[in-house]
Image 1 (cartoon, rainbow, N blue to C red):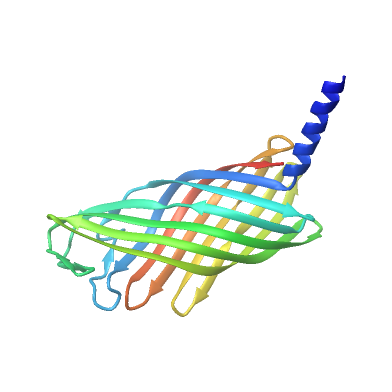
Image 2 (image 1 turned 60 degrees about the vertical axis):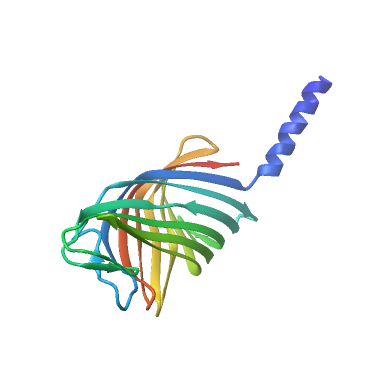
Length: 243
């Protein structure tokens, strides 16, 4: 009996220690809508990785960890890598980051846009079946665009921190289904970024749920160093664990 009591105390202590924590593993397919690049932005050749070249369907994953206290304050961290490949024939001479690829060159392109984010969000409500959360995200962008072909190769990399507005709107559609609209977004004179998900969450147990829906990632930058506007569509599914 003393051992059983001690074990129960350990379980209760662990439950209290992890109360409020949650994690999410998301994955699925990603499709390029458009992706136009030019390096440098004011002197390079504008190339479409979706029209002049062909972009393959990619696969993605995301990891998110969060902590909510007082039912309203949420802190979370997100790891969201993205990499897609494209290929085709250069329709004309392509000047990319100081390297000229002659017309007719078979080109292989890699577009990478990895994102690491820290978010704080405050949740309002409930108002009936609705709850709304608003906050701020600090996003670390680690991006690269690479071209190679005909024995030539060039790569443009970029690392920077971007502030974003975070939001999350939920609607309890039924006892076991919650609709979710959430994301990070912001626009500025130098560019814009939107990463928005729309879908549903269905609980499996008291601590596990599945989430599925559509995610859109869109953004652009138009500066002397680089020009890039891109749109990606995601078919996303996730396992959500809470404690």
